[in-house]
Length: 400
Image (cartoon, rainbow, N blue to C red; front, top):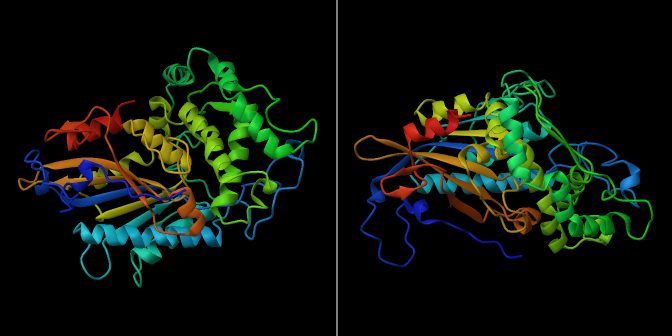
């Protein structure tokens, strides 16, 4: 599965890059320069958050062991994040955001070990030899910025959330989604169970628990369990485990990619719908808006979770497809990056893209090879669809 470096036309704005063809006369985007960046990043590779990874009835064999505690950033995960930090430093040095010496950058991290350690690994190569501020609560303490709904910082408009979730599910309901996913459920159960009877995730009926003002909706049954199992298999592969340990030797790289659809599906239903995303981003929207207004450091990295990335993707209508992953699946170490651009007259604009390692680059601990410009829904500026004025961006981040 070869990696690729994907750059949309808007990525060339202000960077002086060329594709080997004459630049179009319009739009005059070369006058734009990057002066602020927000990196909304999922933590790096971790083991399952529980030991055992799943109840014994779901698999024929014991799950492979890991060298770190459940849910912690692995050594390989830290190396992969370090490769990202070095690549981002080089990218933004070329873009003119950073000069020589220590970059003007800061971090916000959730209080889990994996998010704190991800910020540390990223900072170590983004700013080698420098001391960057990492704003986080004590390890294990609640931080409402990253789970605003559960902590009472964000309130869900439950009727709107449930209506949006039903639209995401489709007219056949969750039973229809499960039926559509049945071939993939069968393949997952073949990996989990080999030929053991009374095993696997596919026999459980999927269901949805609706949202409430202080509670996100919840997915249960086959599709929920499949998302968990598929993510564990992906993490095994990404961490570089021998293929004899990835799915007990019964899973291929192609299986890992196909099964990623379960994880992406969970976020499409539970995290991307705007009423849910807006409420759960209540703690992170303010620092994002301050950064895009020109306040604070030139680069702000937010070390969070797949849910936070999916929330922001849903708010802005962003869609990506990293090689080795299903569409819109937040990759370990992957990030939605927001850039503020200024023109010669001082006018500010915001553009977005997704940056990640492909699945095989994650497994190798290599630099990220996927950087795709993403049009922001409802935005258009300077003749570029998907490029936001600052006012358009504020509106997109504030509407529920």
